[in-house]
Image (cartoon, rainbow, N blue to C red; front, side, top):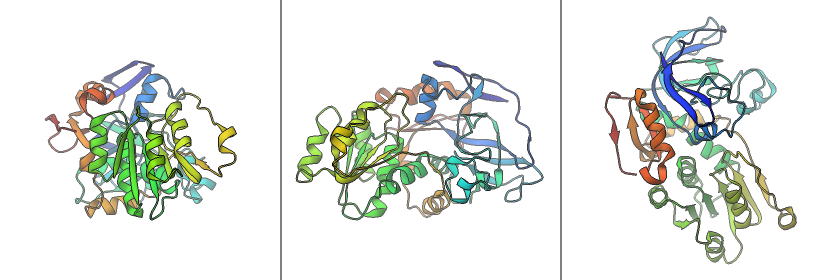
Length: 356
């Protein structure tokens, strides 16, 4: 089969790789129907995630069909259509008992495309399949469903829930890429007074408006002052960092009000300065974290009922074999207008491109 292989910073290719095989009785093999590219994959290609070894197939999100299962897999069987979660869970360790699946110590957590071969291939081995894949109904198109493997749970759990968004809040989301947009969409569930989206790309700010942002701001034009003006000088109740850069993290800490929350969602490859000389007196809560995906079943039901704008984030669709081109389009989002790039799905022999 073929897969997208990381060979070191700045080096990758779509190439022949060994077919996956059952290694443990709790494994499942999934034939991949649809995958997507995540901002975290770009961080890996830059060398920001040194745990990823050269030779690893990337990707941690997919929809596909079960083709083989180990003898201890009981929740799914060959022929089932499933969502492959970005997080793998053993179900037995302390963290899994607490629903903190991202911190699983039993061979789970974020392992696909990180510590083992991932989903950007024709087939993928999924460990601990009973808790790491979700059966899909026919109500969800594969291209829409694949967005529930990572970005929607991440935006919702690490951004909205960790940030403790409440009715009437002012919420600022710094970074209107796919994760930021998913955060904006799911923040609407808590009836904030206003959502402010901050980015440098006009296309992404336009998308933020479509997904519910009340105000948009160019990150280069003092958005901190805009937030202050809108809040009577207080600052935002919740500020969500969805970029993963020192400058944007520090911007978030300047935007938040005393007693407010900063929820860091972005993946950081470099240190950021924590200005405790300013923050210590403000009673600010700062949260970080890897998604746990405990919300995935809820979000799947919402998407099936038409309550989540999954399709609104998909701007480009490619067949699997054009993975390298898809990466170029996604990495060049400022020029291409790419939001979420999906590979495969219905009619995946045809390339479709929609305006962002």
